[in-house]
Length: 117
Image (cartoon, rainbow, N blue to C red; front, top):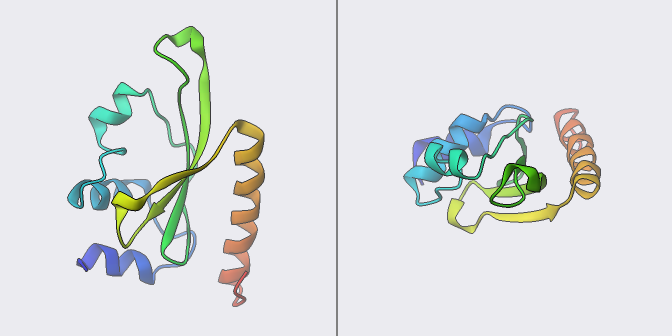
């Protein structure tokens, strides 16, 4: 395990940045957050990640199709800190992502207060 992974795993739920996850991912073969990929998919990451156990969760909005008029789609990505190549989209669609994000925020707050969520 590299030092950045150990550092991220030791942090609290709201102490991880998108930039750190992008660096870790690129170092270990997960290129979704690499600048060229972000640009190609017109992706945006509007929220700070939330870390729960060995995972960081991020909201991604990206192009829904090849043309701008196709709109945008929202996804919740589960970033595996121990092996970024195992990262997956766990939810898709604005309402579902927002619902899950609220639950993750609540769980993160509970963890910070000393509970387990």
